[in-house]
Length: 327
Image (cartoon, rainbow, N blue to C red; front, side, top):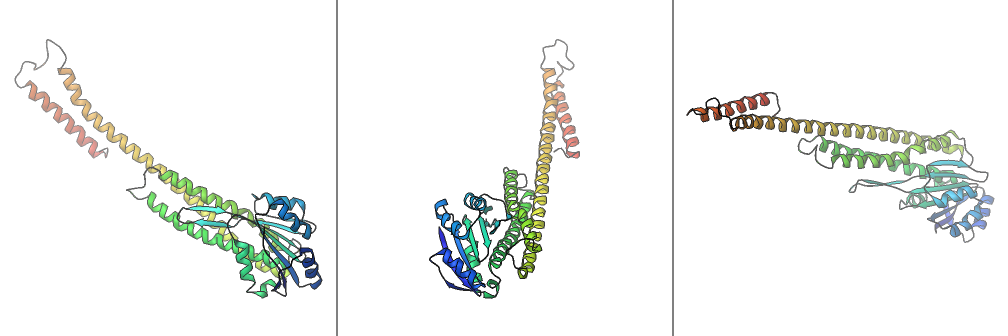
């Protein structure tokens, strides 16, 4: 459905047009104007009106309707088609939720198609309407503002992920809880969120590089420095994502090593106690056998001597294992 539609002239919102073709003709005739249409989760029938009015390429329309696209930039004869992936981070649940925002850019028009709950386009529109100086750059200013907003959100999410990762790291290396059941699953789940974060932010680098270099039509030369600034911010996001992934791998390795060491310690303790139990069992087993001739069998001191031998043997083994750190 169309959530907002407006004609902008000289950086200011003028009116909400009823007829898209008429509004586009008026914008092109004015020269310093453009139409901005915002659409949210459209059906094919709803989007037919928009695509017909602005002459959108059918392949780009298909991508916009189906969603599930990687961030990209495609150039068609009558328009530019860009895909960005806004992210929302739930700190309580520790989950990264992606949305999709498609932007059609052409002579005198901008069409934004949103899938998911991230209302980036509406927020950008409200902010730009308070800053006519940016909107005067035309449709390219909308694409810039959207990319800037999305990348700034990436930076904020990367900072939040870093804080959560530090808490997870403290938990892993805490002697009382580092080997707790479920820690490995928690680390892996966090790694999945970082992977989702990198999957959305990483592919955006190439489209932003093209926009910053001015290699695409419908992008005014005056907006190139702004796109370069966004690309620079995105490089910081990429570095942060790589660092998070490496640190998570190191934490997972350290956790598994801790578990292995703990299991070895447990096995040593079990083996030590089993050895100490085996010695008196062996002695008692021998003296319990039905022999006619056994040393000290009929001696009055035979029983306490055997008990003393057991205690001595177990004490020697205990001290030996204790000195070696097995107990």
